[in-house]
Length: 202
Image (cartoon, rainbow, N blue to C red):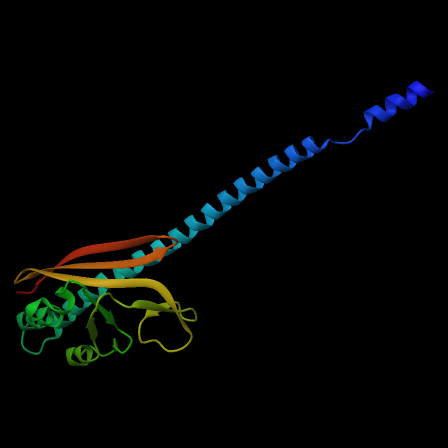
């Protein structure tokens, strides 16, 4: 009987302190590895979301300037050449200011009446402003999903900055660069699109 109890007691002895510490260490390393992977995945998802949004906003900048060109050329009271000249004067005035400056410009279409096809109504409400040291951040309205500057309602700073730059190539050609900048973590990122616009009615 004595031998039987001795064998049972030996088989039921617990973990030693060293074994417990090793098990805890392995578990901790596994959890830290999993947390690192999750953190990186969340950062990648956030980056992808911001880049997609920035791409759409940068493309919108190109589309907006192209729409301006078309409006000036098509609806000028005199002729298309006068409209093109007025368009150039609007975004690239003398002394390389406004959109042709080193800091570029930004636009706000909140007060633009797109239902009125008269050029005068479109131009009078058109707001193009030269950026100071940098362009202001776009605001985001979660209720409408819109980005802009002069917005009403509940808006938040999107952290995205859009900058438009215009370079005069010739009397009948300009280059538009629309770039959107944002910061994520310790890094700075940007997406930019470029397009040449021409005086297509001569």
